[in-house]
Image 1 (tube, rainbow, N blue to C red):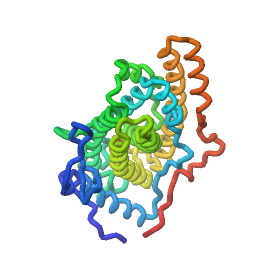
Image 2 (image 1 turned 180 degrees about the vertical axis):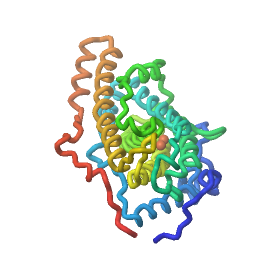
Image 3 (image 1 turned 120 degrees about the horizontal axis):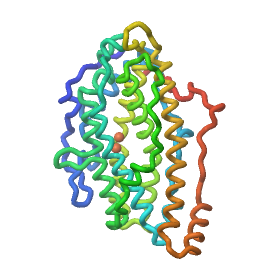
Image 4 (image 1 turned 90 degrees about the vertical axis):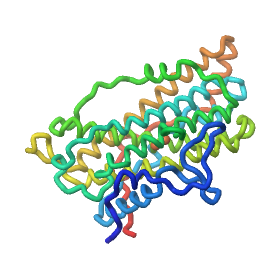
Length: 358
Ligand SMILES: [Fe+2]
Ligand SMILES: [Fe+2]
């Protein structure tokens, strides 16, 4: 059994390493910094070992960790070859839009600090002391929010993606309707309670955490895409710096994935109590149902919407119809395609990773 410390204050979870030099994205001062020449993520001095200690505890308790296998992660659209082709043809807008959209989504991540927690004391049967779950509003959400949207004079992921875009594509024009299209593009799904006997706050919290975990996991493919694209000297203005900034963002995401995985896995291992206190649900039943639903929705709707919109945009951008058709055909031929694993192949146990005891 681990004898590691499991209780932390917000100040501890927010504390910084002793950076020797700050990180700059061009003119923009960003979070984190360098120690011995290596980039070190912000607010990780205690947060990282704390996450390790909570994880060890879960493993010692014999509980599995939620895990999204690579096969469930949709590739970024357009893929790298398609993006490079568009840039070679002088069609910068879709790529500039794509990178701007990523930066806005990163900024939205700060909404995590607004999540209202249910009454975990009465709605979770077992004790939650000494878990990531018990520290969500004791530093974990706030550190996450600052990482994504920046804090005070330090840029976060939003600003780091903007810098990577401007450095890599040499200050491209930004389409002025990026936010508008993002807002109008989503298919609004009516809120549907899956476990109406649980408090709305409990179900909303689980849904929100599951959704963010899915987005954070899918982002791994976005990083690979951006590093490949912005790190290519043929298309990038400053391949080294642009790719480095994206690598720094990627490094910062790991604690987010880790604590969200932990909080959901800890809840999964417990018993949830209905709002009226009369009914009990196995945490695994609730989390697995909500989590797989979020995963399936995100992996099918979003890639399809992205595809439809970009194909339309290429045609809109090129006034010469025959050129538009030609470029569109070539662009389509480079598509690697992707479908979500079929439901009959889906086995929830592959979503769970039982860690070996250390
Ligand atoms: Fe981020
Ligand atoms: Fe993140």
